[in-house]
Image 1 (cartoon, rainbow, N blue to C red):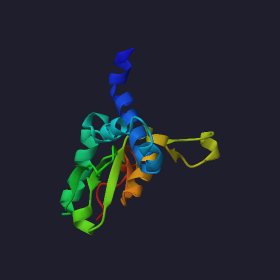
Image 2: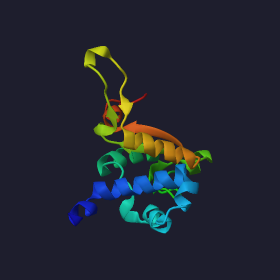
Image 3: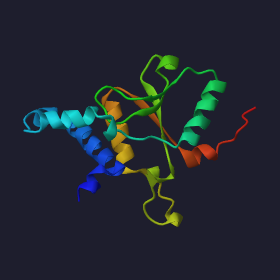
Length: 154
C-alpha cells in the first residue's frame, strides 16, 4: 500500500532515479509533465542517501584528524541526492571525496575459486558516476577493506 512509499529504501531509490533522470537526460526531463515534482524530489532531504555507519565514519575521521587533513563530513553537491561522506576539498583544492560503504557495496560474480574481481553494486556505481558528472573525484572505501589495513604504519 501507501506505506511502501514511505520506506527509507524506497525514498532513496526515488531520489536516485530523480537524480539520474535530471543529470543524464535533462532535456527529456524538462519535457515531462512532472518535471517540477522530479526536481523537488532531488532537493528533498528525505530522498538522500544515508551514508556509512557512524562507527566507520568516526574511524576514518579519526585517521584524517591524526594526519591533520582538513575535511568536511556529509557534503551534498548541489542538485544531487548522493552525498560525499568525507570531502577533502579544503586539503587538495579540488572536489575530492570518499564514499564510505558497508560490506554489501560490492558483488562477486562466479565461484570463489574463479577469482573474478568483485564489482561495485549498481547503486554505488551510479552514485560514483553521478558525482563524477558533478566534477567530483571519488574514492570508494569499503569497511571490510578498511578493517584489514594495518593500524601502525611506522
